[in-house]
Length: 139
Ligand code: ZN
View (cartoon, rainbow, N blue to C red):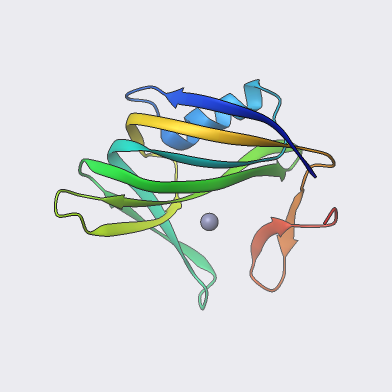
């Protein structure tokens, strides 16, 4: 894949972080990208993948948090752009906590850098080893 356009995007106060990024990439026709972001959220909804049980364990952080660092990518799942992102957050004590970002994270302020990637899009397929949908055949 080759680097494409860089998109600088602000997600508005009160929007869902994951939905906001997904709506942007879908609207812009982006099928593959790498992204980073920073800012603050008024609450966070995260997941931890239990590798032994092969299930996601969801948890909520119902507090104001800094987004220390968010990272993610865009690939295709069932033919549509899919945003996969993890983030580290910190509260007023500065201690970090993070995980796989879920819907239900409410943006206070967020600045996102999306590096579009040009070429055959990466496609997520079921992976028997992990029970996750991971990049498949085009690698
Ligand atoms: Zn994840």
